[in-house]
Image (tube, rainbow, N blue to C red; front, side, top):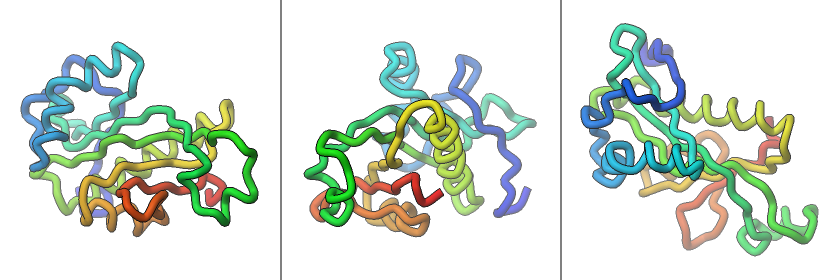
Length: 167
């Protein structure tokens, strides 16, 4: 496995995955996976996808969550609002994305993000989804998403978006 090809498989979080063994260095992201992810799946609040190595399918190398969201027009840049209908716009939310500390620098975050966009694009052929939205916890996370074309929804928040028409 190289940095550009981590050789991972991404699929839904299951009961055989070791949630307790995952440590990304951000306590809220570790706690979510350990304590709340399965509940959110059962309640249909979000879907959780994990990256694992084929040789060690229980060990989670990274994860992301995906759910539906409506963006209020007041949150969008004015240049876009003029071109949109006057009601909330459908979007997909990547609420969390984290990589285990042992996997930092291997391209796992890029792979997870690409998978989330691919899943969203495939669903957008069946239901309308205007954009991807992400919550960036801090400045490094914000820079990570910006390198892939995400821009801030609002100047005072770290919520970013990417219109799917760019694909």
